[in-house]
Length: 382
Ligand code: NDP
Ligand code: MG
Image (cartoon, rainbow, N blue to C red; front, side):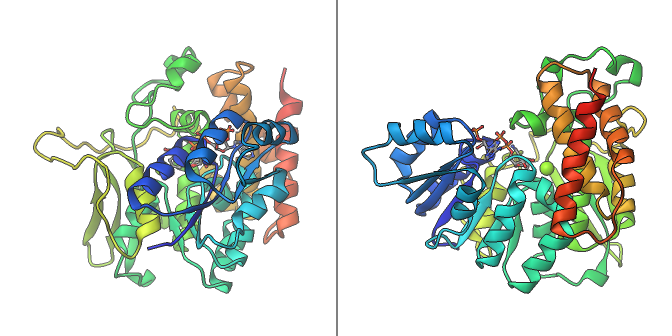
């Protein structure tokens, strides 16, 4: 079990659930970071007394400084601050729960500093998975997924990490709020509908990604990078109940699955207690009352973002970074009521085509692909 944590994105959905687990395990917190929510960060600082607190902007940092001037907590801001939080000396584990590509450099810094990574920030692996996993190997650190599907795979492989024995991974997907709808019906859905996920309460960006199925596309790429598997060995199946969190099929035909109530605190806690398991404040699974478990094929025509992500995974190089950057930009516009539901796919797909593909990119080339893709989306806006 880890001794002390730093939480990047502590005011968000995963960040707050991580703090629940910190309460449960009674582990000290060395650093906390947030975007602009200085009020919630001030409350967290009062309770957890971190040595370091970081905000995204100078303004927000100033607000926080004023709110906690009686505490010894040091307040920083911006990318430099995030990197300081990711490498803070006392922590032996960093939970990356920021939203988006902004998590990439801090994650690389934490790896270089030898920290265990509890990875929620999937965008990092989507954009630069090869570089990140190479760094994990080089620095011999543990990268433990927090994403429920990838944690499930991790658990299915605990005690059996022989890659040649894996036939395929099957990621389960709830299908989101629009499961079963036709492309025509999807023309008229509202943002409020999209934000109503049937099984999980999450931050707004990932909730929209779940409605378009882009989230599952990002997760296919995340799984390829984490487990070093080709696209052909990562499948997706719709499972409305979110009870089976994912499966591994082995070459002899055996299938291992991890089941549990849909509650992110279980994978968050495991990332901190691994290789141990400890009691967790999560409701147990009762198979006799949880209803039937169903499985179906995803509809790639109604939800083209999943097919687009598979295409980018096949292209490799900077394609995934371009797709992710364009998606972050498009979803922000959608949340801001500037574009419609299918515009997300259209903009992301066009942006991927507009950004030159570079194979085996450097970190700078990945960051540039991200920037170009965001710019391409902005230029296509009405
Ligand atoms: P939220 O939007 O709830 O939280 C995001 C966190 O990042 C907040 O602390 C926010 O601060 C901070 N933040 C936002 N923008 C910036 C920025 N520019 N610079 C620094 N910090 C920033 O997201 P979630 O918790 O839902 O998701 C976090 C990550 O975990 C995502 O990558 C998501 O894909 C992944 N994930 C989430 C799951 C979930 O159940 N929520 C499940 C699986 C994966 P502030 O509060 O100040 O805005
Ligand atoms: Mg997931």
